Length: 56
Image (tube, rainbow, N blue to C red; front, side, top):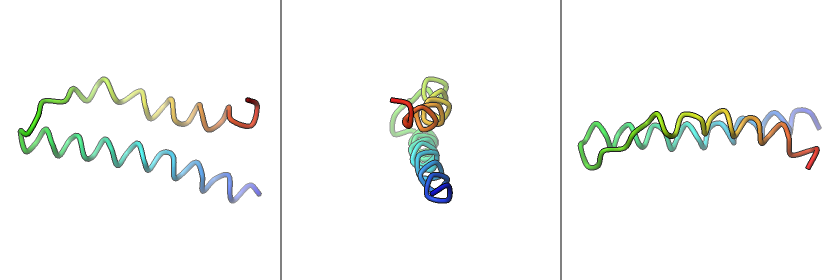
């Protein structure tokens, strides 16, 4: 059961990182100006939400 929990955690963090990498690519290609600092707390929020889900 613990291994499944760790895999879910990895999926949550990977999804946030994937979106962050995509935004960096958009900024580098100058398609749009996206402020990355606004999205960095999403990594912390995804971890906290994952840890709190069993208690909700």
